[in-house]
Image 1 (tube, rainbow, N blue to C red):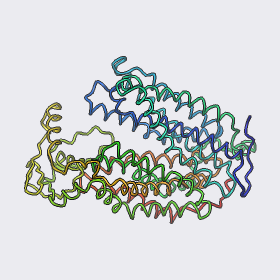
Image 2 (cartoon, rainbow, N blue to C red; image 1 turned 135 degrees about the vertical axis):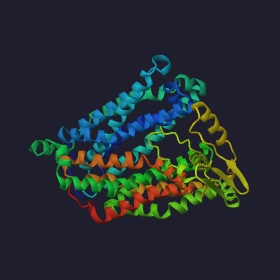
Image 3 (cartoon, one colour; image 1 turned 45 degrees about the vertical axis):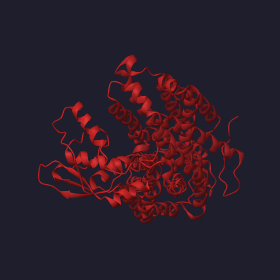
Image 4 (cartoon, rainbow, N blue to C red; image 1 turned 120 degrees about the vertical axis):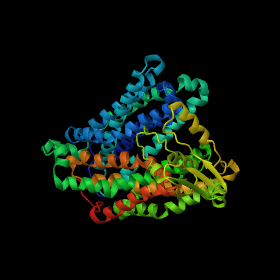
Length: 546
């Protein structure tokens, strides 16, 4: 039975109709995030299946690049489906996006491997990933707009905050299904063919999502606008060709979503990367600690969404950005102290210095993973950055081979510029095995309680900036071009500003020698957002979006 259009009272409890709208929109979005995250969680297995012609390291890099392709096209999905949503309707558009996402994921589960069909396998895989990214680019704006346009005045922050939990819930669902399949089948069978089951399961989830969403009516605000003939005939032109609206789009990007994105990625993905790659904490333990932090903090998406209905969207998001910028250095320093005290003590007792010709030192920013950094300075600095070692720089004579000085010991690097590819790989592996830092911590050496507390604080910052963001974006733009206008800054902010955070941070660490130097990227973006958002974006909690 279809849900009747919901009026916009000024207050009151959540009705059964409201609950169904929130549930249907959120559930579909959870399933879309499930589909999107499956690939990232299974990147190592996918590398063996579809990039087996390459060596394992290169295959994994290309598998990650295919994953990144989904992020790269998200803004284009925002344009395509945002335009459709403002012309045809919210309901029909996010029905289209979930069908594209579900079918793309299902076909990954059916796709023959490289050994079966050759180079066509990775090409088709990347195309399917791009379709997933396009669909996700249209899904979020549709779900947030649809829920907000059903919400009564004074409740939009609360209602849309449920949409904000879906990325975390989708990640949990994907990991749960993968773990269940792996345990049921065993590692060998799972790697051989069982990895396809989580992808094939998306067809069942797709059917459930489509059925539930088919029961919904169009957004009452869009329906009224359509009946009155006031909907936009050219949403892209009206959104970006009109300077008054385009200005708000730009301000929404740099004054809201860019800072939200870097806090989101720093608090979840970069913190996990820092634990496992820099501090050498066991991956299983690090993932369990992060999962526990997410379980503790996830309800605060709703708490801060609810609070934004009372005190405003802007103060909460800006406060989250400022708190993150002010405390990232001490919090990540505390992670080192509690997660790997042996490394902290070793670096203090035996200062590390890279002695190198500055001309051989590059800024190792490589967002597409194709550049080979084979000069001796780059080799030395990259090894130290990956080992979590802070070091100082000392200038060496021109054209000399870089060396790493650890206390009294001197470890020479090597020049790989004239080496064959196979020879360079062997030399790099041998150099990477050189002991330039304290050994990885044993499990008892990690203070799990304190690490969990720190990770929870970092995720709480995520809930502050992310919980109210959907309501703020919806309220910034008029109904006739809302879907298009809000989707683009959201997906540029999260897909590009946030998506490039790990790569940018690592490049900064490798260049500077300071394992915390990469934090300057999220700090700078978060502060930029706080200043621009505070000065130029309006508070919208009392806006009448109709």
